[in-house]
Length: 227
Image 1 (cartoon, rainbow, N blue to C red):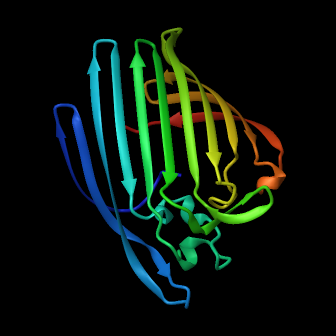
Image 2: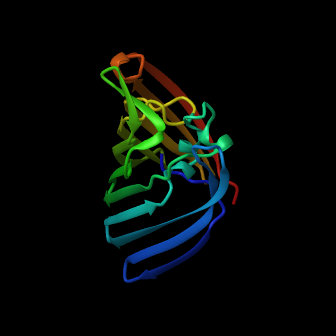
């Protein structure tokens, strides 16, 4: 719920560990209640602080986006028109905020990411105890990992937990309410990484718009970097 794949004009700065940027881009169409459609522009910004010393480093960042509908996956949500917002636009502009933190201490690392709409969004619905209402989607990810060599190759073992609120109708298929994930990857050569992902998703309950079911999936990854 935080990636926006748009071409943007950006102005930023870096000074003594602090950094920030302001950006603007052409956003989705806005559709009024009477069916009038207009092109809308979007903007956002971020501010952060990063510090790194021998064996330890951390980064803290806060961000703001003026229109949540322009997040790529959010724009795929089905709005009040019955079509996704990428196709027919949105009807109410809702902002979004994010908080990010990462830390490394020797071979260990940890991270946390929080993203939330700033108010209820009438283009995305949620169900609470059987009652349909406008959603205020939120999501949290926290994770930790350990990096270590294996037969002379760099590798990392990581675990993550993800939780969402009022997001069962966000995107093409909705988000799970909870995800538990374990990953392992090893650099078999300078430009090739092989990994294994194992994650369990648990859907929202039936009374909250989901199926109440859980599923476990395993993936084998092969990554190649072209330098």
